Length: 107
Image: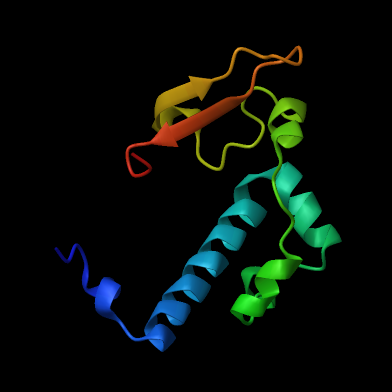
């Protein structure tokens, strides 16, 4: 079963799509998430245009669980809270729960 044409696309097309989506993600983080913006800038990424190839993915900082705790509850959201349709939260085994929000598009 083929769900989307991209599943049969040549590698070059897949890489173009991956690069475009990586740039979109970086642009969204730079524009909407202060903590991520600071970390991206510290890594030398000032704009999505600084991502020139998929090799630049290695320059993008990881988000780790401690980041979710440090910016509890909604400090890492890249969309306004009004757009959330579901929120998942942990029980906080280390003293502070972690929260992840989802929009309709995410689900």
